Image (cartoon, rainbow, N blue to C red; front, side, top):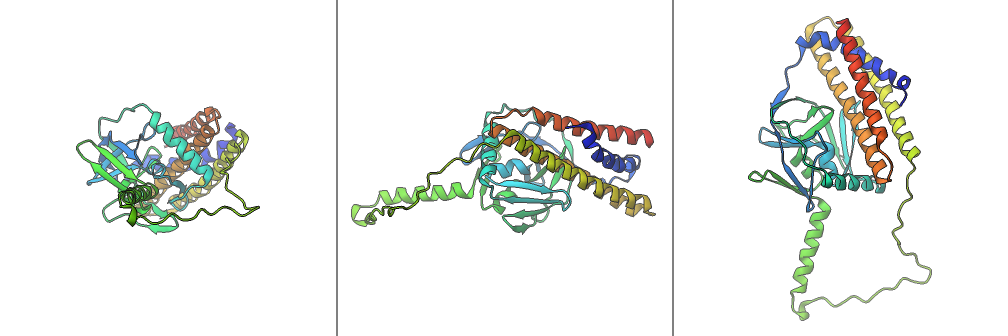
Length: 328
């Protein structure tokens, strides 16, 4: 990724940070302290782990996990709309399912990561949710949180919204989840088992075998062709360029509103909105590069470019902060 091409997002970030950093006294103070938990996760009979640097935590007797991690564990795709602050969870396309399964396999092979021993400060974030085309609201008293670009949500809320099932074992700190498909297979297996225990006289007669007519088609389950490296990275570049354009427009508009505001209440509201937008854009960036990484791995390509994406993004954010501090 060339330096020149990421410049617009730097300008937008700087524009926001220039007025956020000097006005830290106006912070909303809504952050909460939570203790990360080294929980175990078993979904559809397989033990999996969150990505490095991510974890679960409990807040007001509710277990929270990264939205992408739990969505993938439930065999669902997830997308983030930074402009609308909206999470959409839905059934994956065949190619997305390949990436999701690859991500799950990688998590099974991961070594245990270090969980922060001290409490961390996390920020509540107002988010809307759509599950399989249906709008869903968090239960009363529950929230969504952002931490280092990762959105954390109540795990039971996500599971139940997708027709899945989860339980929590406090003694072993284990979350056990079963997807809707897995539950249906269990039910089918149990039904077959019960049928096999019936006396012969009670078993249904075998249905006559129906052979396909001449010229009929049969599904051979062909495997989709391998996606090229350029196709994957070009698609990523397009998404990143769109993110830059969106962030530039949104953050500049907020900056102008802030500069024209005449009372502290309006300024505090704009500061909170600006920080939420910045967190949202960071989450979108992470979503894009995480999906790209999964696609590259699924097709057998090097993921070195992912480091370049993240380094450039983080370098520009830090440069913006330093400039804002100098101008403060």
